[in-house]
Length: 81
Image 1 (cartoon, rainbow, N blue to C red):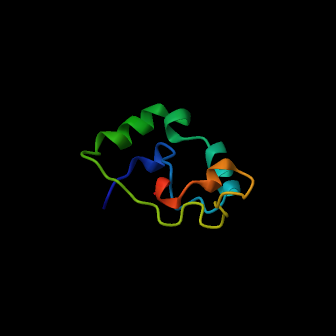
Image 2 (tube, rainbow, N blue to C red; image 1 turned 60 degrees about the vertical axis):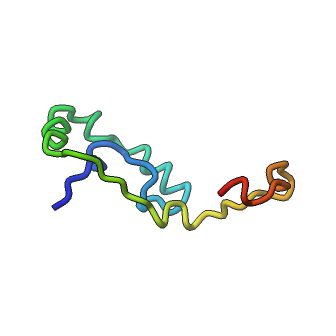
């Protein structure tokens, strides 16, 4: 079983947030690190090394394209990738 600090802290970005509303609601939830620091220390004690999770669906329900009225829209896409 992989232990993750995401249940202790709010790790962002995450696939749990599909829209800005989900993101706002998730950020309003108290973290275990804030509500029960001693329990958070116990959970983190067993974690060793690094685990990087790449979220595939973070904000997938949002339209993130630049609007025509923004000056960034006139730069080539290669600048942003």
